[in-house]
Length: 495
Image (cartoon, rainbow, N blue to C red; front, side):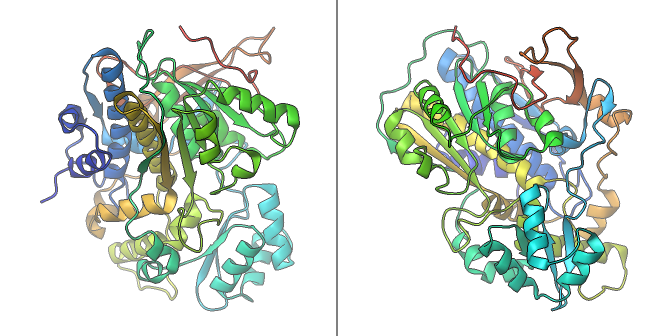
């Protein structure tokens, strides 16, 4: 019988990290069903968060000799897996923005199936409307999509670099060339990509990542969650976005916590040069562009490893680095739909409710963006594991995580029977800072000082505190810039 620790133990060993460190990880004994899902999302949450914390403690041990334990409460981890819904600035919930655009979601198609469209960014929204030649209303989109077969529409959107996916079952995804390309892919991979001397451990280190500099070129959820986690363990995470790309303020406020934020346009020579200068003193290059997307700018993995020996280069993508969809854009909700989760969850809920199954069965999503959040902590685990290897072995290292491979890992954890899942699984609380459970797991965070706060009182926010509890180096809740251009593009001075 698989123990609650088995998934964590297997992942840790797959990264060739010391087995004796595993005994310091404390997890909830009964993590599922911690939420109302037929998938073991409690196990996914506490395992990924716990291992990211454990990797931080091992790095701290290598740097200081101090050993410590890590504990994670599964329900706290589940709320952290939806942290973007549980925060408020100056006491007022951010109700002006929603996670999904009003047009996003699932729609029925001509072939008695469904597609899910993603319209959060303006150019994606307009691109879908251009394909469908319809008005920007759900009713108009629904009518237009009844003229398309699901996979035909998926193919057309991909050809125009838009984002939509056809609904598939697990069986259909496993038979798909992209599903087959991912069949043996673990949720996080590490590989040595160059030679470099072993990292020196000089200087103070009151937290595991003190003095570690992270160039954070990520967007939306998974990558920014990784950067937020590294910052919580002491890293100087400089989050760099483009002033010419649209933002998602509701997500960005939460995922900016503990970071410094700045903006550079890599198409501008001066900004490109500035990023090159920052790279010379970076320890981690974290990016979430499509595979190969930064290579044309001179910041591909091999280019960066050559420019900065000893770097850890971490990449996130939707569908992996092999297969026909390796260059395809994707988001958590779309990967859930394409790879079978929405069908499986809908079937489980129908079995629980005892209702007659309509044909086709409407898709049912996870209660949180579990692929994004798991991927974020897997990235943090991989980055810290690679930093450990720069100390013990030397070299430059690459870390890879994809949402689709993370999905395969969540599938591998097994299922919860429908009656237990939806009868005993507790729904996540409503988006209200007055909810007792939300209040219990949140703490107060100050707005970061910046050129935008001169002459006015700093704002405060309440947000879900980090679920990983380290016994000797508590996580740094820090402050929050609350905007993407709060700081200058420069590093903090190392102690």
